Length: 143
Image (cartoon, rainbow, N blue to C red; front, side, top):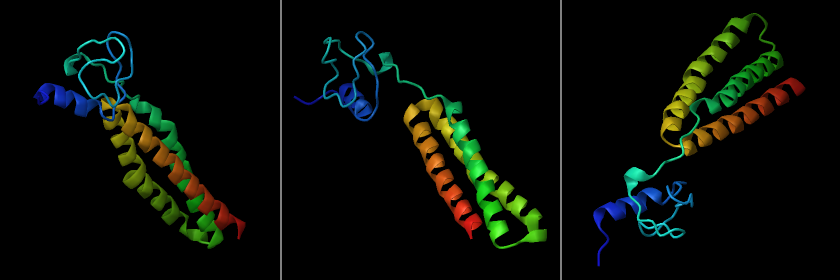
């Protein structure tokens, strides 16, 4: 017997999401049927609560990313003795914030309203990128 369309859609939806059963709280990720294995409740997609992200939780990571850009540019400017070109360095810092940090913040905010996972991934991507930029700044200052 073929699975009904609604049940198939529910199973596909739950394949990679952490959603709790409305009755018992069991995590339904990877469910193969539209029935909770813990309490045997028949599930409908409209009843399920998807844990929402906290869209502003990514802000500290983005502020750190912005500071890492500034540190990296400062290190490179000192390393190459740019002197009078500080206006260029500040312009590049503002440009990187506009072209990288703000779009990442917007994506994290928009996706965070729908599901927690994309905002979390963007946050960790910002942390890794910030760490790499700080490393570049430290190496530039070390020379």
